[in-house]
Length: 467
Ligand SMILES: *[C@@H]1O[C@H](CO)[C@@H](O)[C@H](O)[C@H]1NC(C)=O
Ligand SMILES: *[C@@H]1O[C@H](CO)[C@@H](O)[C@H](O)[C@H]1NC(C)=O
Ligand SMILES: *[C@@H]1O[C@H](CO)[C@@H](O)[C@H](O)[C@H]1NC(C)=O
Image (cartoon, rainbow, N blue to C red; front, side, top):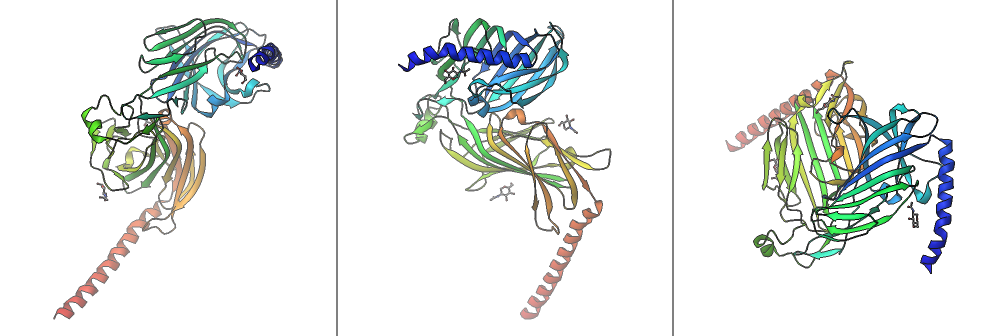
């Protein structure tokens, strides 16, 4: 009955959406996609979608914007959208990054959300250009079954559309879905559909009108540990006395299929290849080169079972938690290290100073639900200004530590849904009066002086009593 109703309503809905899209197009430029190729990488729990669009201006006026459409579910889990224009032929292909911003369009069927790519050179009538888009989705694989035992594989659902959701007419398109292994339980067929090895190919589909959609469901094996840091607080403390102290507080969860039954360490250790395949056994943290005094501790205390490899370009810390993390399990821990301040603190031409450090989470293959980056400036710093290449929430706090007189200004940057692509440099500029450099030593000197006076008095007292 419901299906019948939908069948009857469908042509009407299609007609309305067509009419609306025609209306919206006549008010802006007219574009069409000559060819679209989409590659969806499902090998991790962080989904990467590479989209190549050959766009043609079929209107009369030049176009400087190209819109991308996303379903409401996708937008909720969208971590990043990047675009570049390719120029030159195959061998000398170069990529020029383009600005992408979220936009509201007057007509948005089914709550579709849009992102706009701003072209550097407007596309004139009849011209075509090729755009490369990368977007990343987090928390978009749904474990099914939702609970698995230690010896079972993790299976997940992925939902999308076989046809690219686009506000434009798409002349030809193909979608490739890459799975981590050849174990695919099921997938929706939208002819022509073909599966070979670890790849499912949807299409080619010809002449799809704007906002076409064909839901698909892929059920497949994904034994990646779904490492999600629910909250990460990174505190970066600048001392002009030579050290940059970084303290990172993690609360990590395995967001994959929940663990069922009891955990058997014996079974886990004797049959490592076939039990706990989707558990999180170790973590890899990429730290800056020249780190020193690295430590890693959890609620119980310091954990020494971590290995640090350093070279000129990077340091890698391999962390082995006390127990493997299964689906639904959580762990909180702290990583701390120091780096030479001269590697990250610079002077601008106007005499102010700035920190140039990496944003994001140092753990490989990890999603961060809520990331807080706190830059603790030296005492007496003024006019802090953060420069981050993507949108973040910014705030200021004051921190008091020992030897502080007026407290330190803390620049707080908050980003939700961070992925490894957010591990890029950011800067915090501030001005500093060198007179404040004397504050700490003066405090130290007076503290030592007081200490010695006390000590001497005490010793004198002690001696006099003994005699
Ligand atoms: C719009 O929603 C209807 C009902 O949920 C669905 O059948 C249709 O495929 C959706 N279309 C798009 C473009 O998302
Ligand atoms: C842990 O190790 C760090 C660095 O080695 C050290 O500073 C800290 O005091 C240690 N903490 C405990 C509780 O042992
Ligand atoms: C920040 O550091 C990166 C490399 O670590 C460098 O490429 C970039 O130019 C630096 N930015 C500034 C503003 O100094």
